Length: 400
Image (cartoon, rainbow, N blue to C red):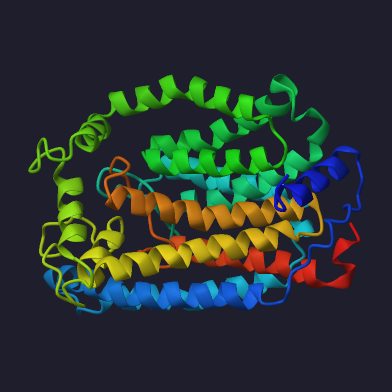
């Protein structure tokens, strides 16, 4: 058995036995460098992202009659609240979130429902055919908040239902009901990629909590017809899948976004065309500051920029999983794992889309892509992860 699996199995055995005090994880403790390393990774990703965001958005801002630095400045203004949120959550014991799981999820659900009601367009305007933001004085994207709330709720219920997780009816079914309730208003926005990502992140937490892999696979098989119906019933989704299957088949039509993304990445070579030297941002690559920022990195910074970005998120995964592994209890372990996955899985999916390994969909690159709601949630995830590390390193951290 691997050294990573041993402490995880120990946590599960202790929780299944109804213990409130977690068993010793074979002497595994954090060495003290993990929180600092995590902050350094976030700082590097944020700094590099702001630089590339400026380059990717400067022309677009100028065409809108705005200063070239407008989008980068807006993103920078979101850093302050994000850092404040991160440090505020750092001081909260992760185990205190368990009784808040249902209220937080209920609050997010209300926001999601308000977003799609027919008479709320004054505060939930339709942008590019979708209603994804609430204008409450500041723009809020409830689907981003749903990531935190649903991961937290799934971790909480997974701990409470440890003895029933191996049952399809009494273990998995309650999770499916709540996941469906949360994702339904997201599908109505419509935001198919966000709904799929939410279920994926939650399923990973549930699997780590002890759910049977066979039930997870069954869930995927049952969901396939539903997913295909969602794709087939909306024309542009089906066209994106067809473009993904044949990127060169219709480079000016269904394959346009993937084709232009591959041109951007491929033209970067080893060292890139240079900062600000992108040609794809001149109206060729849609959403270069957001959905396809990784393609912009590939063009302007080349293979070295791509490798650096990938290395940052792999390092985040390494440090995040180390922190989760040393958590003082099962709930903190699942929470740390979920927060790490929130950042890493989102980043890997964003990169996969830019490299035509997945159909085109709107997923941000955490800490780098434009979007202050996503930035705030990313900082919140890091704050919770740091709190897990703090309780793990504290001698009294294993008290529960």
